[in-house]
Amino acid sequence: MTRRFPAVIFAAVLLVAPSIGAEPLPPAATPESVGLSGERLERLRAVMQEYADEGRVAGVVTYVARNGRVAHLEAAGMADIEAGRAMQKDTIFRIASQTKAFVSVAVMMLVEEGRIGLADPVARFLPAFEKTTVAVPSAADSSVDVVPAKRAITIHDLLTHTAGISYGEGPGQDQWKAAGIQGWYFADRDEPVSAVVERMASLPMDAQPGDRFVYGYNTDILGVVVETVSGMTLAEFFEKRITGPLGLEDTRFYLPPARKDRLAAVYTAKDGGIERATDPRLGQGHYVEGPRLAFSGGAGLLSTARDYGRFLQALLGGGEIDGARLLSPKSVELMTVNHVGPRLAEAWDDRHGMGFGLGFDVVVDLGEYARHGSLGAWGWGGAYHTIYWVDPKEDLVALLMTQLRPAGDSDIQRRFRALVYQSIVGPAEGTPAAER
Image (cartoon, rainbow, N blue to C red; front, side, top):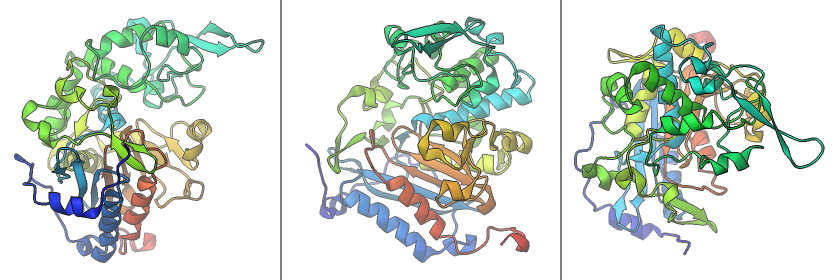
């Protein structure tokens, strides 16, 4: 049954006690002290509450930071309607493809150490990729020809999603399906990602390396490269090199049992409302009770708004925050410029005015983009309808966390973006007068 939930239900659950063990919040600021309007941010809070009250989402957490300080961190609605758990500021979310940013950073850390080169062939680290193939639809009939790849797939190809590798749903999808490799979800697998990636290498890709932007298993493959080069599992690498140093206590692949009551439930958009997702492959249970063997670099992490916001703040800060340095400023700069020319917009109709860097989309033409933003703003999102972006010109980090899959025709992401930008009424700290 599709559910719509009146505001009175949400008011009642506000009596639920806060989560045990909630993490400390990052440095806070009044909106006005960072060039935002508190009155205008109230519009953001009210609209997000409206989405929850009207049953268009179960609940959301929204996060806005400027000049390195958090001016807005709010929770609205429910984390789990059936269990009567209200959304909290420290609720844990499945972030799916937002995991890709962590892997991209991990790869660049190894590039900075001289252990990986962007132009290196993937086969240097994963020999199974020495010779790959491409599925090409026949011009004569509905058959598919398999031809050799014209060149080796490189690390740069994987970072930019120009390796020709999809999620197993292109011209050669019958072979991918027969191999049991389709879709981004790994949490239910009882084998490591490396074993799946080994099998991928023998399957036909969707396009020749470098020819097109094709979104798919690229970052899962990169995660296995990180494991091979570092000698650690991806979970261990993240804990030792990224989440540990940054103090991201709730960012991990699988949830400790003691924290399961902080995990938001997954809902599905239906008939203008929502219903609780019942398909286990939508992630309802495996992150708590699954095999816990697959560390998916493409879509496997859980996190909170606070944790992910701090990670993004480190990148906005040139790769460093509070003395913990992940990358140099020049590496972050390289990651957040367009590497694919018009290929992203050619692949996806809703990405006009955008390019793609080493793990992030990038605004390259604000008029074609036709949304609030700035040239050079970069970000991405996740399959559960989470989204983030960083706007260096405005010294801004913004996050919307919810759990809605599939999201149907939800417009909450676009509405959130407009509401964040309309709250800006003053310059970012340190902005030269000529740029104000």
